[in-house]
Length: 85
Image (cartoon, rainbow, N blue to C red):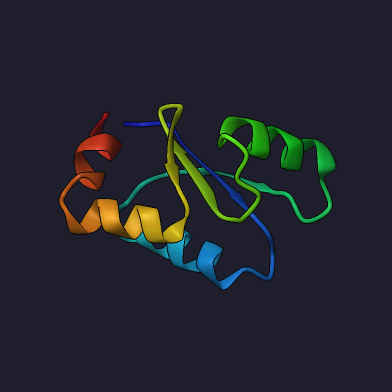
């Protein structure tokens, strides 16, 4: 099983959508809630190549992107193979 990490903020509807898709796929994930955590925010920005929006999703260390990127990957059949590891 792949290691999935997602950086989120608590009021973010895009974060909820990304988490719902991951849950639908049965993927366990580690969530980093960055609303009040400047250290995790800095970590996210560095790992994502400068992106400051949430969510930011990583699968086995590979940056996937945000909610729309995750949904697009799923639509073209690329998400499940990554989640399978």
